[in-house]
Amino acid sequence: MLTIAVPKSMETTLDHLGRAGRPVVFEKGRDVGFTSTGDEVIQVRSYDIPLLISVAAHVGMCGSDVVEERMNQFLKRPEILTEFGYGRQYYESPPTLDLVARRAEYVPSIEKIPSGSIILTELPNLTREEFERAGRKVEGFTEDGPEDLKEFIGGCKRSDSVGVVVVHGRIPAMLEHLNGYQVFGVMVNETGDTLRANRLRVVKRFQTIRTLVIADRDFLDDENTSVEIDSLVRDLNEAERIRISGESEAPGRVSVEGAQGDGPSLKERAS
Image (cartoon, rainbow, N blue to C red; front, side, top):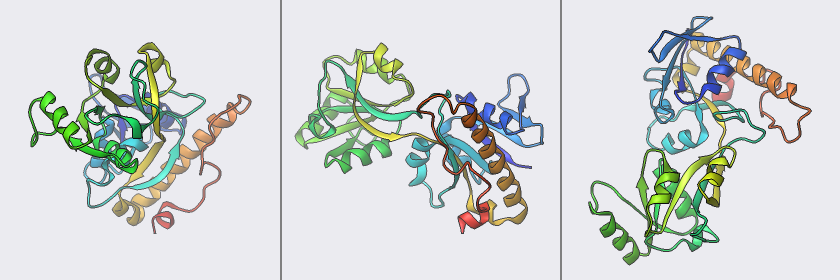
């Protein structure tokens, strides 16, 4: 049987498993449950799922933004087996990862963000890469640097850099209350409702986020485990194909690449 890691805050993954014939039952107060087929399912922070692959789970389901953020932190990268176009909810379009600003803080592009600005983000590696790709110098607010934020901002101005500051959620509230600073945020945008409610605007769209199914290559090389993972992926693909086709009359629905047919086995795909 498989151990499957899913995000604690993403009920769509549990719904997807149920539609794939693997409904999950959790004991009260526990984040570990079991499917009707005997698979173990553990709910953890999305950020921790790439770490758990090969250590405590055979398969993980999480956002492509998290996988990209964590990819370069491990010597052995997880294999991406399939992907789906939903986030925390089922919407017509998949979620996006956006660089946002207060409406009053008008900046036309990432290249025009003033030096000394601070960028609030839960994904520092991905954020740094995006700014460096735009030709911007980036400094990180870490334990090794200045302890005072004002001192850090001053250093960024002198070095013609922007400063990346790691936060853990609630970015719109922080943008609203950090008055007197040139501050921007990197956040997931599903419907635009949060941006409108908090009077924010998108400066740059970093990426479209997909829900990925990932696994460790060693499990794909194991004949018994590979067969089980292959079966899970087929079931997930078929369940999503049925969901999408059931909504096909609605315009603009997301198509799911790789959901048609069985395709090559996971072992063939990983080779």
